[in-house]
Image (cartoon, rainbow, N blue to C red; front, top):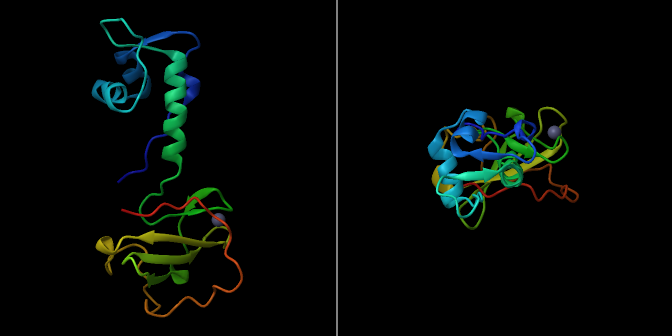
Length: 161
Ligand SMILES: [Zn+2]
């Protein structure tokens, strides 16, 4: 899946009432997407109006939260680096994989930009030799050796799957 959009809040006018169609046009998205934001994702519309009007302050608040969520997930092949504060590609020769008791695979690697230890989890179902994190050079059964000391505290990873 492609990286999720980050919506620019600077495009939103102050103290303005938008229609769904204006919002869709503003971000180059479909009207249906905006209707879904309203019906399922909690974007507030102005009550008592037959048409779907959204106040700019509600739109801003909604997209702020949406952006915050969308910033975290990594594209396939990336792991969030807590030092860079960005999803990064792990160095391919640093990758190690270890099966953990709940059948997920724990992935260890190093950031290809700052060399910080990275880790993430891949669900066992998605795991195969074709997975981007599959170590090409190291036997996956070997426990990682670079695990001495306390790992950086990084609460940003999300369980895959
Ligand atoms: Zn980094």
